[in-house]
Amino acid sequence: MTFVANSTLSRGSRSGWAEALRMPPIVALSFLITATIIAWSIAPQLFTTYSPVVGVPADKLLGPSAAHWFGTDHLGRDLYARVVYGTASSVSSALIAVVIGVLAGGLIGLLAGFLGGWVDVVLARLVDVLLSIPKFLLAVIVVTAIGFETINAAIATGVSAVAIFARVTRAEVIKTRQATFVEAAFLSGGSRWYILWRHILPNASRSVLPLAVLQFGESILVIASLAFLGYGDPPPASDWGLLISIGKDYLKWPWLVYAPAFITIVTVLSVNRISRWLRKTD
Image (tube, rainbow, N blue to C red):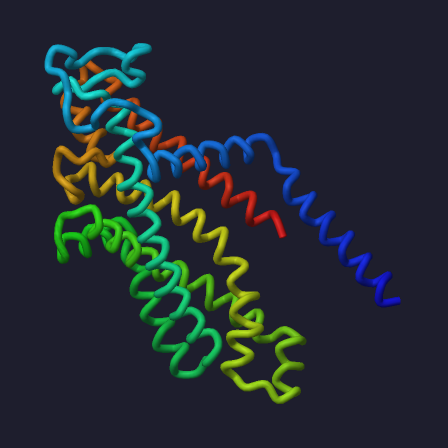
């Protein structure tokens, strides 16, 4: 009987993996785009031989061609190389923002939902205050207070996402805390902290993963917006938002704006599509 049960579980597990891997083509394309962006951020020198800082003045403002896929800027620098090298800053900053949001917001939501009582009231009011401030405005306030750098923009973006992660985690913890298996663990003599880390946290975190992926894409957009406004690293940095900001001064050469804007939009849309797929996948 045990052998039969184990065989059934094994077949069920394999079928679950097969079902998960059978993704729509648009999701597969989104994964491919996201993987390419991550590869750009890890090893940009493998994707271009041009320098993102040094240009050829004689080649300035050239249109897209086989030699320069995205054209060149006003200093003769290859725009594709600048976009590729700027990926590292955009991706790493977005990851920092997501980590801050997940850790801080997750801890607040976990404690508020599990402990309840006055702790829940105090932390819930704190989350309400953060939610009452527009996210982008909160990010601008934080980055203005701590300094104009890309890393500070990432911290500001992460702080602005804390309330969302706290709200979602709190709701999941409350729902999981009322589950039958949690009540059974209590009746079996399990301590509060053991049940929290062994049962509630793993189940509550399942809804946090799609939100973290979604927030990764949104963080890229927010950080690019902050860089566009001048709250990131100054030139010759090549953050995507900064490239768009520089390109807007050269309207006769639209590829200076279109290329980094297109990459930013495609990346955010791909990450959002992956997040939607994860929400629908068990």
